[in-house]
Amino acid sequence: MAKVYRVDDAEELNLTPILNIVLVLIPLMLLSVVFLKIAIIDVTMPQRSAGAANQDGEPPKRLQLFISRQGFTVLDGMMAMPPVAGCPESGVTVCVSNPDAQIEVDRHDWVALYNLLIDLKNNPSWTTHETIEIVADPGIPYGMIVKAMDVSRYQLVDRADVDSGAQKGARLADKAALNDAAVVQTDVAREDGTIARAGLTMFPLVVLGLPMSQ
Image (cartoon, rainbow, N blue to C red; front, top):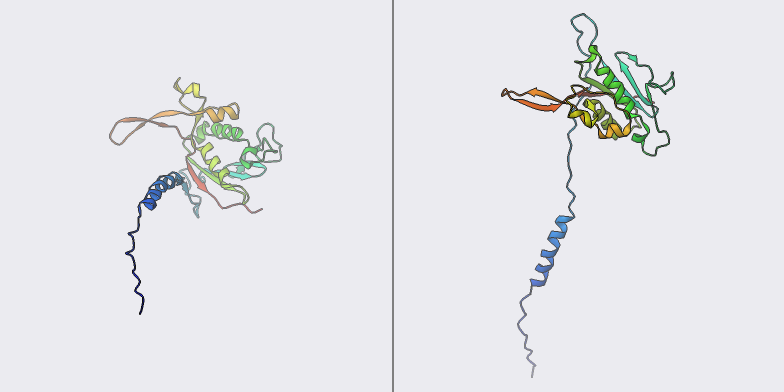
C-alpha cells in the first residue's frame, strides 16, 4: 500500500525585515551622495584676426599674459614689459617668488602680477581696455589659468578701504593682502533706470590662446 505524504501549506513570505533594512539604507545612501557644483567660466576662443584697426589706423591694443614655469610674461601690445623689481633683467616679466613650493600655483608671484596689471589699468591709455589674452605652457595646470583669470578680472583694494569709498583698484602689499582684498564697488545703471552696486572690473574679457610649444 502506497504511503500518502501530506504537504503543509507554505507560509507567506515575511518582507517586513527586508523593508526595515531598506528604510534604514535609503537615508544613508542619500547622505553619501556627492553633489557637484558646476562653475561656468566666461572665456572667448581666439579669433583668426586680431581685430580691426582703430580710427587712427593703428592696430588694436592687445594685452597678453603668457604663463610658464619660470613665471609670467606680459606683453603690452607686441612688446614684452620689462621685468619687475627683483627679477632678472633678461627673464620673464614676473618671476617665481617661491621656487621650492610643491604646488605649482604657489610658486608664482600673484601679488606682483596683480600690481602690474592694476598699474596698467590705471594708465589712461588702458583704462577702457577690457580684454586680456592668456596663453600657458602645455605643462601648466588648468588651476593656474583659472587663478590668472581671477587675478585679472576685478580691481581690488584693502578691505578697510572699501568702506571709505574707493573709486578704483590699488596696489597690494603682499600675499595676505591679496587673499583678504575686497572688490571695488561701483554704481551701475540697470535697464529699468535703477542703480545697483557691482564689482569694478579690470580685464574681465578673457581670450584663451593655444598652448606655447616647448
